[in-house]
Image 1 (cartoon, rainbow, N blue to C red):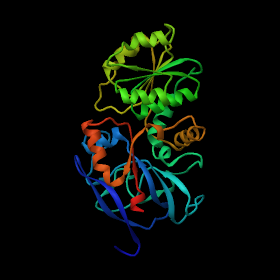
Image 2 (image 1 turned 90 degrees about the vertical axis):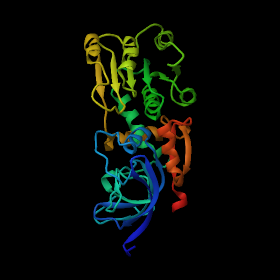
Image 3 (image 1 turned 180 degrees about the vertical axis):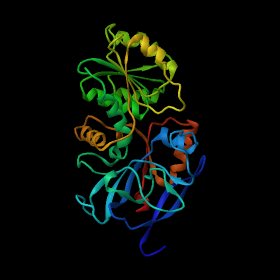
Image 4 (image 1 turned 120 degrees about the vertical axis):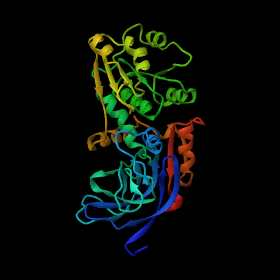
Length: 335
């Protein structure tokens, strides 16, 4: 390696469904960049699973690539023109920036990488590395809950027991809502019961409508936060909303074009909102909820493992072979 480059261990999606750990050459940061040594990175199971299986239809796959868009670490070098950051400062970063045979697919799962200062965030001291390593996924939940009017004291139903659903439930509670989380994985529902929701319903063995109506006192709920996004799910919850005023926020990622029945929405005159992508305001608001103790992802982690075990984590995601929820890669062994 040249004198201006450093070694970086990285998770590489070598080709569809093939994951390897390789060494990359990481150059010094360019103008406007910060070089950050990673402590932890959070796996976004849905998005990264789709990328690995070449099913992410929004952006064509290019292999080999380094996946991931959420990591927390420490600044090791500061590029020209960057202000407001200091060496040794703990920060959160989304995308990485470098040139090489393995290009960033956002690029967060690696031990050392350069990031544009515009994609780097100062970390609240009170928030743990593990919580921060899942900030982008958590902000999807924040974004969803932030779109609902009249939450205070009212019942909201969250569909989906993954990290997005759990984060949405916690963020809705932070705004004063009473939250019912609907899912079908008992181990995830137990975590939701402890950390995310006021009540949970197992859609595989319980009557969702009956359970929700009993909890709400037979009154319509104010909103549905839908991280599942399937027509069959929409048909299940549509009757829980009051026609003309009920709100639905779609907050998952769906393949293809037909995953909601617009006719049902029109007939009931329901309000439908959509969320997508991160912004600085949303990520900082998410961190503020973490600082206040109202949003916690660390208790939802089922796997905190050394980065060398990344391939095993993606296999679990692809095969759904073991109970799992949050997955975090620990990069301390590479530093």
